[in-house]
Image 1 (cartoon, rainbow, N blue to C red):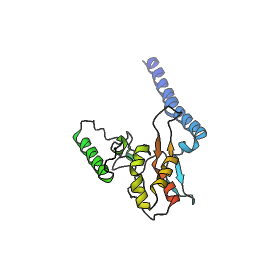
Image 2: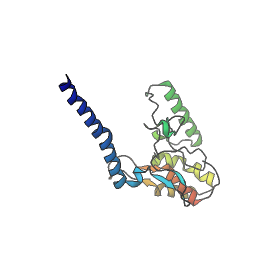
Image 3: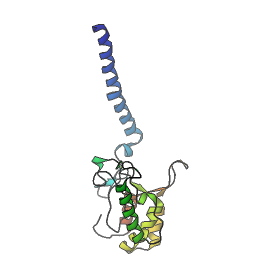
Image 4: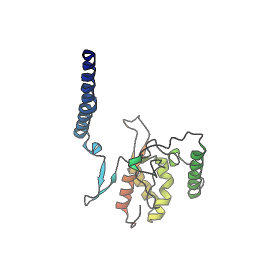
Length: 194
């Protein structure tokens, strides 16, 4: 029995070392060399070197002078330690009620506007840092009014921060909310909020 058990134990130890230690360390090391900013979390710093957010992780913005991200089901909302979707199916009454409420609030703020899906639907992780250009366009009048800026100036910032499809064909155009809000802060100084 010992002759049969010994190879099994050796294989478990060997593959644990390979797949549980060596492989993750190698992938982490290569990622740190090839993509240092992304591997470090995409941290964004202000002029003084203070970390103001992460370009790869969505954050909650609620003040009217900022663009708001899509809804989040991560914890109480944008809780990076509790990243997850709501796991509610499309026929779940609670999900339908929440989405209808969000859509009604958006319609009240922008009568007659078409509501994009990402304005009412949370992402799978609940931490999506980007919104669609359509959702940004829906919020542009509110942000411009709150900052006493022209709508065309805010629209130009949205356009400047809109990224196209990856490699020209993958995914959808998108706008990073944190980077856009930081550009707005640089263009105007509205005071505290967030």
